[in-house]
Amino acid sequence: MTKQINIWSFILSLCFVFLFFMMPGTESIFGLHPLYLLFFITIFTFILSLIGFLGIQNWKGAVRSIISVVLTLGLAAILIFILFVGSL
Image (tube, rainbow, N blue to C red; front, side, top):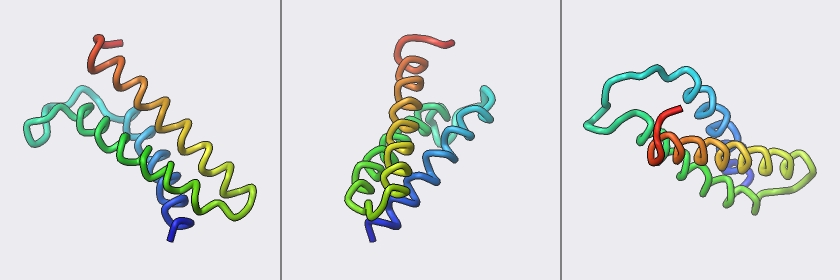
């Protein structure tokens, strides 16, 4: 089960990074700005990435976990800067 979480957190982190770059300045969804929604989902994916460390069975799983943690932390840092400090 944790191996599947490891794989899914990696896939989700890649998808959310691509979604961040593809997301134009769109209108609010369900009353939230899309970047807030992406930020909350990114935090959830970061937690899944940390849980995915339990599913490491070989070096490929370790690299996958490290990449997903770095991607989600980087995206969360960029989103925090944009949402709470200002725009780029």
